[in-house]
Length: 229
Image 1 (cartoon, rainbow, N blue to C red):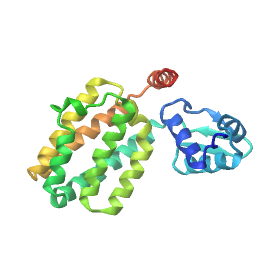
Image 2 (image 1 turned 60 degrees about the vertical axis):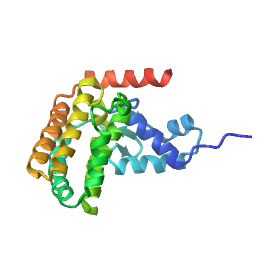
Image 3 (image 1 turned 135 degrees about the vertical axis):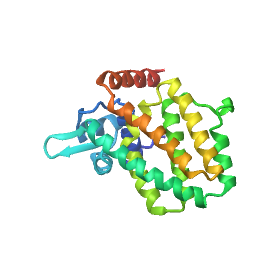
């Protein structure tokens, strides 16, 4: 029985992960025919996946030239972080008012630094957990538009966000900061929760501003080693 060919969604997911893991390096050129051969599919699902990735800002498509993985624009990323801080402040304001105590307690428990059995040191998993934390607070705000815009920002900074979790100290700090933000929300101390959140996001923003090509190259080699095991 022949193995089923990847669907357009499968191709999209695999290409997206390759970009996020820097297997497809910023500035790399890819073509529909090359990718079709690599995935063993026709060019139709490849084209669909590439068009979606372009819409989401992961690459640029140039007629008769191919597709180019988008270079990291540090200034543009900094702008996304500025918008993110504004959205997160509103998220906390609404969550402090509307998010049930039981939900906040559950969220705090999942980030308790003392609960080492739930800790993750995997950058990909940490990025997903970190994003989930912020989206859970946005969901607790009850504002659907806020959730939509924050999710969009998350998608645009996801690659560098993952790089931020290649350091154990940063992971330790994230657990502590998330836990403390939850504690302030449980006390309905909005001002302190917002202060901690600004500090938390500003740390990530400064990481992005100081991002170097050496770090990107190390991330690509680390990803390749992991997948070759």
